[in-house]
Image 1 (cartoon, rainbow, N blue to C red):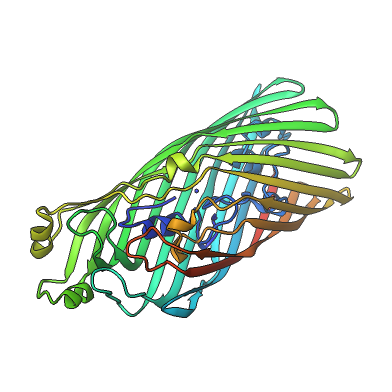
Image 2: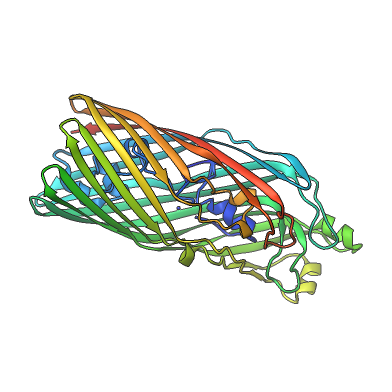
Length: 449
């Protein structure tokens, strides 16, 4: 999976597996972390602090990603450019597999932001990766579907990309109180290539097919934030991210040959559909405190609430203009509608970070984030493996003249989950175990004009 997590969302899919895959988060390589498919901080500084920057944004990238009120802290026009490399690893076992493997080449996630003061206000522009994940699993398709069908050893691959292009404005109300807002255009791209069992379409429910699906689309959202300094050594931050609706379109192709052979039916196996999916990404509230506890020491605390249950409860999917007359005859239409239940849970994410100024121009950072995975065991598959819960961060920042460079590292501690009785048809993921971990390295360069 690839982070870009990585770890906000999905595109058109035909399954719970697909959604999780696309969403993973996440996601993904493509696996995600304590934030589901969302990232634990955008930019190297935020990564090193475990994402705890809502009360201490330092530059346009921090501000545009989490708290736009931070734009008022800019003293000169500033450009931030960043790149993050992500590598995931994992394993999967069940009654048909003892060596399921997640292999992922490093994925690269770009970010950029610019901010400056314009008279009494500050403005910002940014393009950030909310989620950028890619998972490439290799394991045997467990016998399932009608008659215990298997497509043998298969690639189970998913990809999700969520980009946000945004403009922001902030105003310093008093010397110790600032507010800010952003408006963003969301681009979402998703893909799934894997065996799939239809979950809700009445005439096809329980049948298994090979599926290759891709969709893309646009949506919009907004953020708002504030900064308040009640004491010279303490700053409070609060931000809100609105929910996002993205309607994606693309195509779905596949082959149901193995399922037809199991049933002894001599029908045309290949198919193609136009695909549509409506995806809802969650609203989020983040609150934090930044405390200059000693002259060279700063502590950052933050709590996020993510409304997964309202966004990832069900996934409406519509396939139209099917080209296979035999399948159309079974369904009674050239349209298939699926609405699999995801049942993700709302989650709190707890973050803490510390910065130590070794020298006036050199800072060291450590961070930690914890949040339970929003994915329930009942719908968990390797493609929905956004199950990491503990994230450790570390990094450093160095300034010279008008330049600054930050390096950040995150380690998503490997997490293992066991599924007893799966609620996905037809029990292929019952009595299975999935383990996923991830490494991320970020580099951000800043230039003050």
